[in-house]
Length: 312
Image (cartoon, rainbow, N blue to C red; front, top):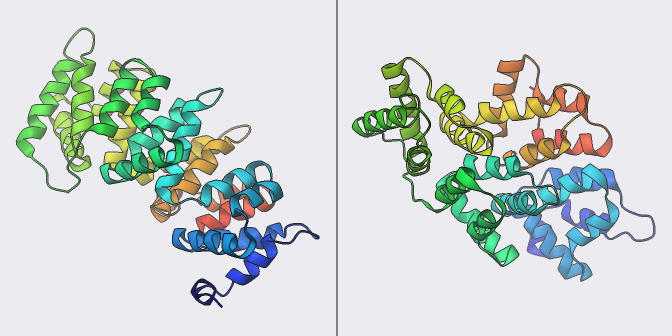
């Protein structure tokens, strides 16, 4: 027995289940196995499957699964940076581009995460992320995304109070103080400052001018550019709160935005899902698990709930 099989007792069973050709795929078993394996284990499973059956596991899953479950499982099979690269690529190049999704992923990630995404993007698709942003976005939105993926930023918690004061003044002068908006100043500060520094700028801005920086962004910008700036700002303060709101919006009202539901749950499960669940319960007085349960069904529901973990 290989080292991989010794490490993961359920692995051999999963491989035999997935390789079944006469009886079809035991979807429940596949969902249960894959949803409870971390990125390294999933990678081992894929390697062992190819070694044992000379076949690609993802291709086999495509042939055995369908619909929303297929979308969610296939995305889950990648590591976090690989998933993000795929989400961005699909969002930028789809027949109907989903620029909000691409903007959300890019503007909510840290510098170190973006560097890994860029490496995965080039290795998977043979083009640089910046090239696709250049070709599929426009205006100030394009300028913001290009700056955000290419600018070096400090990732620590230390804050420069003097710089925060200077930046708060510059943002006020570029926005609320003048007729029109100096978008270049917003792009420069939002792409160059660390999350901690942006939080300090936001606090200083409120103290000096009596209004929030978020409200200033909303009043001075619009569209995809506004969405990018707000995503950067909100994720600098509390990314879990930001994604709890995104998930609530995806399930609010008639129908469910399953594309968003899948994207957020699958991409955040191995990052900060427990914090997102806590924020969701605090804000909406309902567990995220209960909300997802009421909006989904079948193996698709089981898979998402398995990723979310215990309902508390």
